[in-house]
Length: 271
Image: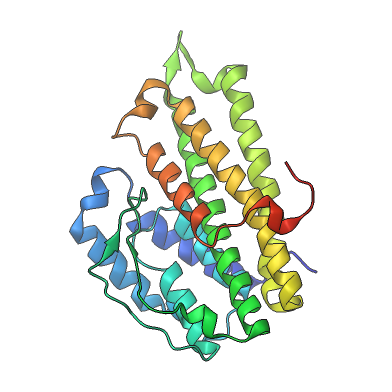
């Protein structure tokens, strides 16, 4: 396995990052900015990234976009459409459902719906179902990694400008060590996710699911720890509605539950 990204993959990642930085919400107030959301929706739709798999993209490439969208809190549909595209590619019939019947969720950046009837994934054959499961778990894991990166960057930026006793709080060991630990967790998550994303297409379906499950457990724990640290670094303001840190935590908690994985499923004695 070669973990290095190709030049095309780096360009895709950079393009997704640029779009997320330009049009993603920079504050809690911007979450309700309809004009911004409309521009973001138009931009994402114009990229064609929601049908990456039909266009021949690998699991790595889908994960790269999902990661950057998680980091930038992109609040228009991506995970749903890209997985629906994969189902259609595998020959399953996908129903749009009643989009007016939204499900209550903690996530402020994504709307959830309850689609009635038999899930399309259940209509797939064994190996096709496993391959789809691997992509779905890996993509939600990539969103978790991106969310962790975004929360960590938010905390680091705040630690550089917030002063106590005449010094930036980031200069104090207690804060610096928390942020360094978060960075180490993120680096580990990058490695385990890259393997899972590569495995979507390169491993046998059952092994691809296993790699995705391991990545999901690791990255879910990382995302929660990093997001909670971001809130703590912000101090009192971190517990207010206006601080963006809680939006990252909400997204992380939701992505953890999407195609959720338990320790029992990976059977490696992890704790």
